[in-house]
Image 1 (cartoon, helix red, strand yellow):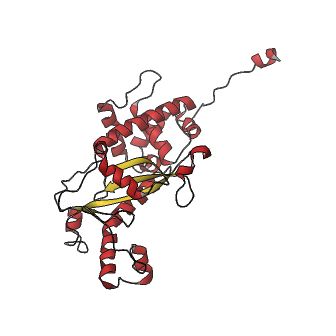
Image 2 (cartoon, rainbow, N blue to C red):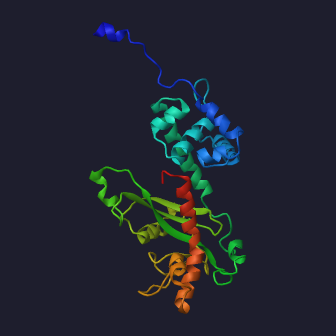
Image 3 (tube, rainbow, N blue to C red):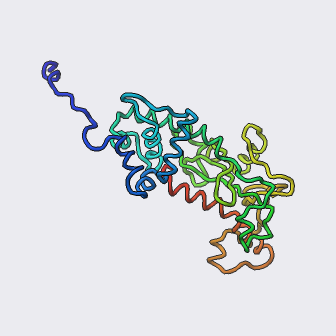
Length: 290
Protein backbone atom coordinates (compact mmCIF):
# COMPACT_ATOMS: atom_id res chain seq x y z
CA UNK A 1 0.00 0.00 0.00
CA UNK A 2 2.85 2.38 0.83
CA UNK A 3 4.45 1.61 -2.52
CA UNK A 4 1.22 2.29 -4.40
CA UNK A 5 0.44 5.58 -2.66
CA UNK A 6 3.99 6.83 -3.09
CA UNK A 7 3.52 6.66 -6.85
CA UNK A 8 0.41 8.87 -6.86
CA UNK A 9 1.14 12.11 -8.69
CA UNK A 10 0.78 15.26 -6.57
CA UNK A 11 -1.50 17.65 -8.48
CA UNK A 12 -1.57 21.38 -7.64
CA UNK A 13 -4.97 22.51 -6.39
CA UNK A 14 -4.96 26.03 -7.90
CA UNK A 15 -4.10 25.85 -11.59
CA UNK A 16 -5.15 27.74 -14.70
CA UNK A 17 -7.24 30.88 -15.07
CA UNK A 18 -6.28 34.36 -13.93
CA UNK A 19 -3.81 34.79 -11.14
CA UNK A 20 -4.76 37.14 -8.32
CA UNK A 21 -2.53 39.91 -9.63
CA UNK A 22 -4.00 39.55 -13.14
CA UNK A 23 -7.52 39.74 -11.75
CA UNK A 24 -6.71 42.90 -9.77
CA UNK A 25 -5.13 44.42 -12.88
CA UNK A 26 -8.38 43.78 -14.75
CA UNK A 27 -10.35 45.39 -11.93
CA UNK A 28 -8.42 48.66 -12.20
CA UNK A 29 -7.98 48.78 -15.98
CA UNK A 30 -11.21 47.22 -17.25
CA UNK A 31 -14.76 48.57 -17.28
CA UNK A 32 -15.20 51.39 -14.76
CA UNK A 33 -18.03 49.54 -12.98
CA UNK A 34 -16.12 46.27 -12.60
CA UNK A 35 -14.09 47.21 -9.53
CA UNK A 36 -17.14 48.67 -7.80
CA UNK A 37 -19.20 45.54 -8.45
CA UNK A 38 -16.54 43.14 -7.17
CA UNK A 39 -14.85 45.13 -4.38
CA UNK A 40 -17.53 47.77 -3.61
CA UNK A 41 -15.07 50.60 -4.31
CA UNK A 42 -14.50 52.61 -7.46
CA UNK A 43 -11.14 51.89 -9.04
CA UNK A 44 -9.97 55.44 -8.29
CA UNK A 45 -10.68 55.02 -4.58
CA UNK A 46 -9.18 51.52 -4.59
CA UNK A 47 -5.92 52.83 -6.08
CA UNK A 48 -5.90 55.80 -3.70
CA UNK A 49 -6.46 53.53 -0.69
CA UNK A 50 -3.65 51.21 -1.76
CA UNK A 51 -1.31 54.18 -2.12
CA UNK A 52 -2.23 55.49 1.36
CA UNK A 53 -1.56 52.08 2.91
CA UNK A 54 1.76 51.97 1.05
CA UNK A 55 2.80 55.51 2.01
CA UNK A 56 2.06 54.89 5.70
CA UNK A 57 3.70 51.47 5.55
CA UNK A 58 0.61 49.82 6.95
CA UNK A 59 1.06 47.22 4.21
CA UNK A 60 4.26 46.45 2.32
CA UNK A 61 4.86 45.25 -1.21
CA UNK A 62 6.28 41.77 -1.48
CA UNK A 63 9.10 40.68 -3.73
CA UNK A 64 9.46 37.54 -5.76
CA UNK A 65 6.49 35.28 -5.06
CA UNK A 66 5.07 37.63 -2.41
CA UNK A 67 2.13 39.76 -3.51
CA UNK A 68 1.89 43.51 -3.99
CA UNK A 69 -0.30 45.73 -1.84
CA UNK A 70 -3.04 45.99 -4.47
CA UNK A 71 -3.58 42.23 -4.43
CA UNK A 72 -3.43 42.10 -0.62
CA UNK A 73 -6.06 44.83 -0.40
CA UNK A 74 -8.10 43.10 -3.08
CA UNK A 75 -8.23 39.91 -1.01
CA UNK A 76 -9.51 41.79 2.03
CA UNK A 77 -12.13 43.80 0.16
CA UNK A 78 -13.27 40.79 -1.88
CA UNK A 79 -13.91 38.74 1.25
CA UNK A 80 -15.76 41.61 2.93
CA UNK A 81 -17.85 42.50 -0.12
CA UNK A 82 -19.29 39.11 -1.10
CA UNK A 83 -18.88 37.88 1.66
CA UNK A 84 -16.44 35.18 0.56
CA UNK A 85 -14.89 32.40 2.59
CA UNK A 86 -11.15 31.83 2.76
CA UNK A 87 -11.56 28.93 0.32
CA UNK A 88 -13.58 31.08 -2.09
CA UNK A 89 -10.84 33.72 -2.05
CA UNK A 90 -8.14 31.06 -2.42
CA UNK A 91 -9.78 29.89 -5.63
CA UNK A 92 -10.31 33.44 -6.90
CA UNK A 93 -6.75 34.64 -6.20
CA UNK A 94 -5.01 31.31 -6.85
CA UNK A 95 -3.27 31.11 -3.47
CA UNK A 96 -3.34 28.63 -0.61
CA UNK A 97 -5.86 29.08 2.19
CA UNK A 98 -3.13 29.85 4.74
CA UNK A 99 -1.77 32.62 2.51
CA UNK A 100 -5.24 34.09 2.01
CA UNK A 101 -5.98 33.98 5.74
CA UNK A 102 -2.67 35.64 6.62
CA UNK A 103 -3.11 38.54 4.21
CA UNK A 104 -6.79 38.98 5.07
CA UNK A 105 -5.90 39.60 8.70
CA UNK A 106 -3.04 41.91 7.69
CA UNK A 107 -5.48 44.00 5.66
CA UNK A 108 -7.97 44.13 8.54
CA UNK A 109 -5.27 45.32 10.93
CA UNK A 110 -4.09 47.96 8.46
CA UNK A 111 -7.61 49.28 7.87
CA UNK A 112 -8.29 49.38 11.60
CA UNK A 113 -5.22 51.57 12.17
CA UNK A 114 -6.14 53.78 9.22
CA UNK A 115 -9.70 54.18 10.52
CA UNK A 116 -8.44 56.09 13.57
CA UNK A 117 -7.17 58.77 11.19
CA UNK A 118 -10.08 59.06 8.77
CA UNK A 119 -13.16 58.46 10.94
CA UNK A 120 -13.43 61.93 12.45
CA UNK A 121 -15.30 65.22 11.89
CA UNK A 122 -14.14 67.01 8.73
CA UNK A 123 -15.89 70.27 9.56
CA UNK A 124 -15.81 72.36 12.71
CA UNK A 125 -18.68 71.37 14.98
CA UNK A 126 -19.17 75.07 15.73
CA UNK A 127 -20.38 75.65 12.16
CA UNK A 128 -23.83 74.93 10.77
CA UNK A 129 -23.55 72.12 8.25
CA UNK A 130 -24.42 73.06 4.61
CA UNK A 131 -26.78 70.07 4.42
CA UNK A 132 -28.89 71.73 7.13
CA UNK A 133 -28.61 75.24 5.67
CA UNK A 134 -29.79 74.03 2.27
CA UNK A 135 -32.69 71.96 3.60
CA UNK A 136 -35.88 74.02 3.83
CA UNK A 137 -37.50 71.38 6.04
CA UNK A 138 -34.73 71.41 8.67
CA UNK A 139 -33.54 75.03 8.49
CA UNK A 140 -33.51 76.92 10.82
CA UNK A 141 -35.02 74.50 13.35
CA UNK A 142 -31.98 72.18 13.45
CA UNK A 143 -29.27 74.76 12.71
CA UNK A 144 -27.34 73.72 15.84
CA UNK A 145 -27.45 69.98 15.13
CA UNK A 146 -23.96 68.62 14.40
CA UNK A 147 -24.89 65.04 13.49
CA UNK A 148 -26.77 61.89 14.44
CA UNK A 149 -26.04 58.95 16.73
CA UNK A 150 -27.48 55.44 16.60
CA UNK A 151 -26.61 51.82 17.14
CA UNK A 152 -26.82 48.89 14.74
CA UNK A 153 -26.53 45.14 15.17
CA UNK A 154 -23.85 43.22 13.26
CA UNK A 155 -24.04 39.43 12.94
CA UNK A 156 -21.64 37.68 15.33
CA UNK A 157 -20.06 34.26 14.90
CA UNK A 158 -19.37 33.04 18.43
CA UNK A 159 -19.58 29.69 20.18
CA UNK A 160 -22.79 28.82 22.01
CA UNK A 161 -20.85 28.51 25.26
CA UNK A 162 -20.05 32.24 25.21
CA UNK A 163 -22.90 33.41 23.01
CA UNK A 164 -25.53 34.21 25.64
CA UNK A 165 -24.37 37.80 26.09
CA UNK A 166 -24.42 38.25 22.32
CA UNK A 167 -28.13 37.43 22.04
CA UNK A 168 -29.96 40.59 21.01
CA UNK A 169 -33.64 41.38 21.48
CA UNK A 170 -34.51 39.15 18.51
CA UNK A 171 -32.55 36.24 19.94
CA UNK A 172 -29.81 36.41 17.29
CA UNK A 173 -26.09 36.48 18.03
CA UNK A 174 -24.76 39.93 17.25
CA UNK A 175 -22.46 42.82 18.09
CA UNK A 176 -23.95 46.18 19.03
CA UNK A 177 -22.08 48.97 17.24
CA UNK A 178 -22.60 52.66 18.01
CA UNK A 179 -21.85 55.19 15.30
CA UNK A 180 -21.89 58.95 14.90
CA UNK A 181 -22.26 60.55 11.48
CA UNK A 182 -22.35 64.01 9.95
CA UNK A 183 -25.20 65.36 7.84
CA UNK A 184 -23.35 64.53 4.61
CA UNK A 185 -23.25 60.82 5.52
CA UNK A 186 -19.69 60.50 6.81
CA UNK A 187 -18.91 58.49 9.92
CA UNK A 188 -17.20 60.68 12.52
CA UNK A 189 -16.96 58.15 15.37
CA UNK A 190 -17.53 54.40 15.82
CA UNK A 191 -17.50 52.34 19.01
CA UNK A 192 -17.36 48.56 18.51
CA UNK A 193 -16.88 45.43 20.59
CA UNK A 194 -20.10 45.30 22.61
CA UNK A 195 -22.31 42.21 22.74
CA UNK A 196 -25.75 42.33 21.17
CA UNK A 197 -27.42 42.39 24.59
CA UNK A 198 -25.72 45.69 25.51
CA UNK A 199 -28.11 48.65 25.64
CA UNK A 200 -27.47 51.58 23.31
CA UNK A 201 -27.32 54.04 26.21
CA UNK A 202 -24.66 51.94 27.96
CA UNK A 203 -22.36 52.12 24.94
CA UNK A 204 -23.07 55.84 24.61
CA UNK A 205 -22.14 56.53 28.25
CA UNK A 206 -18.87 54.64 27.91
CA UNK A 207 -18.02 56.49 24.71
CA UNK A 208 -18.50 59.82 26.46
CA UNK A 209 -16.76 58.79 29.67
CA UNK A 210 -13.54 57.32 28.30
CA UNK A 211 -11.10 59.88 26.89
CA UNK A 212 -9.27 57.22 24.88
CA UNK A 213 -12.38 56.77 22.74
CA UNK A 214 -11.87 60.22 21.22
CA UNK A 215 -15.58 60.98 21.10
CA UNK A 216 -16.36 64.23 19.18
CA UNK A 217 -18.29 66.04 21.91
CA UNK A 218 -20.70 68.75 20.73
CA UNK A 219 -19.59 72.32 21.55
CA UNK A 220 -21.74 74.43 23.91
CA UNK A 221 -25.06 75.21 22.26
CA UNK A 222 -24.74 72.35 19.77
CA UNK A 223 -26.22 68.86 19.90
CA UNK A 224 -26.63 65.46 18.24
CA UNK A 225 -30.03 64.00 17.40
CA UNK A 226 -30.62 60.58 18.97
CA UNK A 227 -33.58 58.21 19.22
CA UNK A 228 -35.53 57.30 22.35
CA UNK A 229 -32.95 54.67 23.39
CA UNK A 230 -30.71 57.55 24.50
CA UNK A 231 -31.37 60.09 27.27
CA UNK A 232 -32.59 63.57 26.40
CA UNK A 233 -29.80 65.61 27.93
CA UNK A 234 -27.55 68.59 27.24
CA UNK A 235 -25.96 68.09 23.82
CA UNK A 236 -28.21 65.14 22.87
CA UNK A 237 -31.75 65.70 21.62
CA UNK A 238 -34.19 62.78 21.63
CA UNK A 239 -37.80 62.73 20.35
CA UNK A 240 -41.00 63.12 22.32
CA UNK A 241 -42.28 59.77 23.54
CA UNK A 242 -45.78 58.66 24.37
CA UNK A 243 -48.12 55.79 23.68
CA UNK A 244 -49.93 57.54 20.84
CA UNK A 245 -47.07 59.65 19.46
CA UNK A 246 -45.57 58.63 16.14
CA UNK A 247 -41.89 59.10 15.39
CA UNK A 248 -40.44 57.01 12.55
CA UNK A 249 -40.94 58.29 9.00
CA UNK A 250 -42.64 55.08 7.76
CA UNK A 251 -45.31 55.60 10.44
CA UNK A 252 -46.23 58.96 8.90
CA UNK A 253 -46.23 57.51 5.39
CA UNK A 254 -48.64 54.78 6.45
CA UNK A 255 -51.07 56.81 8.52
CA UNK A 256 -50.95 60.37 7.30
CA UNK A 257 -49.19 63.64 8.20
CA UNK A 258 -48.20 64.55 11.78
CA UNK A 259 -50.87 65.77 14.17
CA UNK A 260 -50.13 68.28 16.93
CA UNK A 261 -46.89 70.03 17.84
CA UNK A 262 -45.23 66.97 19.41
CA UNK A 263 -45.70 64.86 16.29
CA UNK A 264 -44.57 67.76 14.08
CA UNK A 265 -41.40 67.95 16.14
CA UNK A 266 -40.94 64.18 15.95
CA UNK A 267 -41.42 64.23 12.18
CA UNK A 268 -38.70 66.85 11.69
CA UNK A 269 -36.45 65.17 14.26
CA UNK A 270 -36.81 61.82 12.47
CA UNK A 271 -36.10 63.50 9.12
CA UNK A 272 -32.90 64.96 10.56
CA UNK A 273 -31.80 61.72 12.24
CA UNK A 274 -32.64 59.62 9.18
CA UNK A 275 -29.12 60.23 7.84
CA UNK A 276 -27.66 57.65 10.25
CA UNK A 277 -30.22 55.03 9.20
CA UNK A 278 -29.43 55.66 5.53
CA UNK A 279 -25.70 55.32 6.03
CA UNK A 280 -26.17 52.04 7.92
CA UNK A 281 -28.36 50.71 5.10
CA UNK A 282 -25.81 51.66 2.44
CA UNK A 283 -22.93 50.13 4.41
CA UNK A 284 -24.72 46.82 4.94
CA UNK A 285 -25.79 46.70 1.30
CA UNK A 286 -22.21 47.19 0.11
CA UNK A 287 -20.60 44.88 2.67
CA UNK A 288 -22.74 41.76 2.81
CA UNK A 289 -20.57 40.33 5.58
CA UNK A 290 -22.27 42.87 7.88
